[in-house]
Image (cartoon, rainbow, N blue to C red; front, side, top):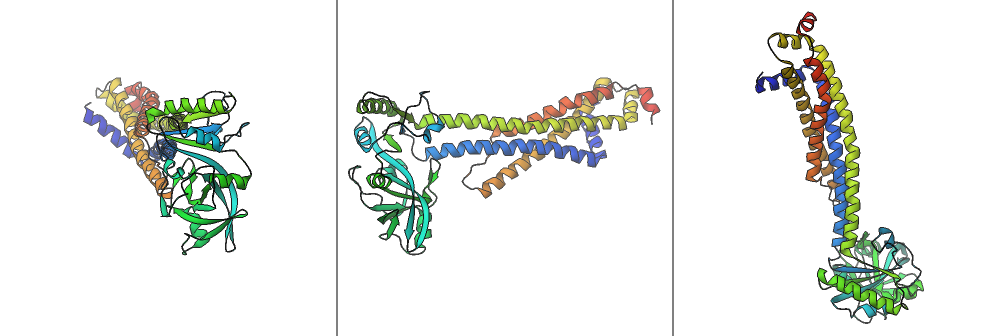
Length: 402
């Protein structure tokens, strides 16, 4: 039997039972589409996190209060409390390190804000003038915090776009007074809309001088210290100098954790890659279910086409030819179902990107190849038994069942 005859045999067999073939294609397509969509979600989450951290610059060293016992980066360190304080004086001491171009102490908290009877709760960041460059923030109006010693504070504030819209509407915000907690602040700047970074949107932030924030929250503790180096290569030297400086200032005790942005990115990248492979594996289980359906359909096909198989063998078709014909049918059905699944998966990922424009839900190329490959292998593996059963039929007995 020629290759063209084998393909025609498989096509005619599939088209002879359209409902059963459609159900098989649907099952295979759903399995492949699940792989494509779930890997798009997992890989999209990885790209989103990497993009969020990359948005604040690539030469960043983060000083966290408290010591990580594993001497590595742990995401839990971003939210844990500390037995020892980082202070503004610590930040000032790190400013003169070799290779340091900017430094931004950070105090974080929440407070009520009000203007003309309008009241809401918002996130409050206390920092220095260099924070805008360290975090790569952009201003839509006005200016950022005033330059000067980080230990001195004034009652000025930079607000996010959402805060401006909710409190002032169409009126200009620059120069207006807002009440934050029990203090009044003059708005000197408005951030551009849609700013992101390190899991926070700047649209709902109020940024004030660090000393003022410490006075409001009655604390001397810093949440973090952000240090921007001259280059990525300089970070290790900055890290060593910063650690030595802080140990000397903290009575010889190493009670801080210093992490580079590369370490943060590598950790999250590793975690989310494993997650992506995990969800892809879970989705691939549905392909096994589809493979079982392939086997069932092929077994029914063998039973219904016994006489046809007997006629082929009576005309000289070998057992190998019959096996090849049925395996070709299984492979054809699996491949067509996989292609439909890829199209459905791409469509699903496109819908996700439309609903959430900032989320890069693009399926990685390997997921498409893996989905199609797994579907094809599954179809062939589960098509072996029906193909063998067809090849083993006795031609005389098969023809007697016509």
